[in-house]
Length: 367
Ligand code: UDP
Image (cartoon, rainbow, N blue to C red; front, top):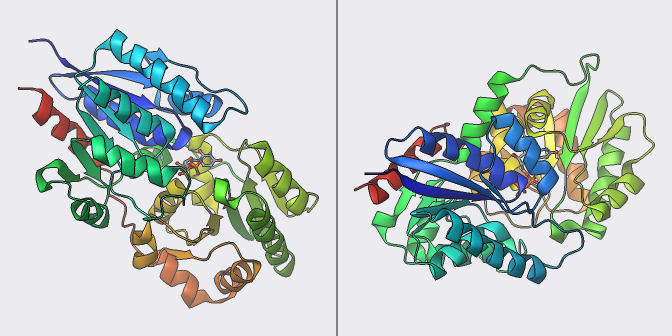
């Protein structure tokens, strides 16, 4: 009997990073083969991730276009993925997370009666507009998926509450932890070898933080660095031009603030490892940083990752200057506060998620 074809669809940097260990695990599973499809939602950043993991897509859709609306991207993606599935005839489709690529993959699989598996299922803020459009994407994908790979017990509970049958839920851990542990081991440390003070890492890119919230956080972060002469701030700037202009205006021209191009994944992982604490609105970074014992101040009003807050690795502080200053100062000066956060165990996984996902798919499609 010929191997069953599992199409793995990726489109943005985070979903691609978290899908690479899944592709590796599927390729090692007897009875399965994979077709990796890239929608190219974040084209440039994807190529770097493929290189890091030594995996190339089988089908490239190249749908990235500057300035396109969500509707335009969604409609182009529906047609392109429909053609891709026609071409590769998958027996099963898998996609990760909460992007337009994830949602559209599930939709097109549904229209073609192909079973769909959702990696990182069950994350919820329960506010359909926040984060926008990701919360909608993940809830809509849940309706379609026949296998839901929940990273944590809490994510599985969210799915149960929405009526997903027990036998369709698999608690696997997060595949992002599989990726980060793999990559951290392979790459040597090269960041700021001559700097011996405290290094704060910041990333901010979420749509709901564009404009004033971002300006306020950046101004407070600058003040923190000015108050602590032994510190430096490293800002990994997202490619989005609106994000860059706000960050450059508020943080540019300071000798202890380094505004850098977004490092490639493996370099970014080493930067997390090199830092003392992190200011971020990124979902992936919230999961990765606890693997290195780095306290996180989460620059969001809500998070679909409360496990880190409950475990003590993260504080959800929002985007007001006062909160950034209060918690930033605590991390600088309150040793006990810092150590408690740094020592909390990572609730997001142990590095074995992808193998469990591959086994669930095998059970379903290899008869
Ligand atoms: N990341 C990266 N370079 C950067 C910032 C983030 O490689 O400059 C990685 C990070 O390690 C994580 C993923 O990209 O795995 C998170 O992406 P992002 O913050 O863009 O998206 P989110 O996780 O919020 O959806």
